[in-house]
Length: 330
Image (cartoon, rainbow, N blue to C red; front, top):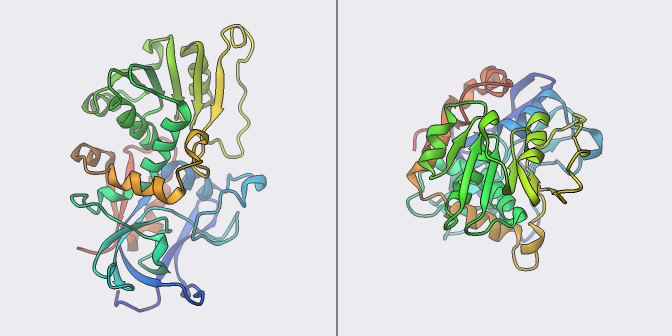
């Protein structure tokens, strides 16, 4: 697509239906430096985008769940997404020609404030950089959990967020980290990151911290079972409009378990006084210099084909992990 032509973006237009649409340039604010970014890759976030695609966001969360550069209103039609990597074609001299990450939807080129762009660290491949937003989420989960060196940490759910939490937790000195998943194929990645792996029926108990990221009510119930006395359970999944029942009888109170929610919209409480959203995202981008993380990007689809293939990529139980949307050779 010629630079400067009418941009195209993916829109979710009805439950289970998406299409590419031409979009008007965003309105500019006076005195704000604007960059033109030509997209190279974007990442399809299966958890949240599946709920958007299916129209399963509860009305109470429509405002809180807006993406930073979303167009349209929930439920439909909406331009949604938050994991774009591209090259700055026009803007301040210190950014022109640089590759950047932006919390932007799936769109082939876009204009955005320079302050919204995070330059990529040296040595981070563009395709891997689509993990930035999910790694930021995982970093916030670790902070919310209070995980520390030596802790016994169990992560339930080997999706993209669960595996990135596993990656960060396994780097804590002396931590005993176990990834729990029904898919045995996740074991290889867990071991690559330096963690153990277990099927749900074999998962070890007495964990100091259990992080639930499976998106399954059964997984959350298992998290309560695996936590040791006065242990912490962090709910990192989001169930959208689904009501979840929990076994809060039995030993839940006598074991004094602590169940907390983690959500990337706010910086973790313990860090909020000193960490901004910008600082947290910059840190996530800087943590991507590890070749092992390439194993998490398992699928690739061309932008022109995205609307036609997205139902298969987002269907429950779809194989693989992160899907990369390819825009152009770089």
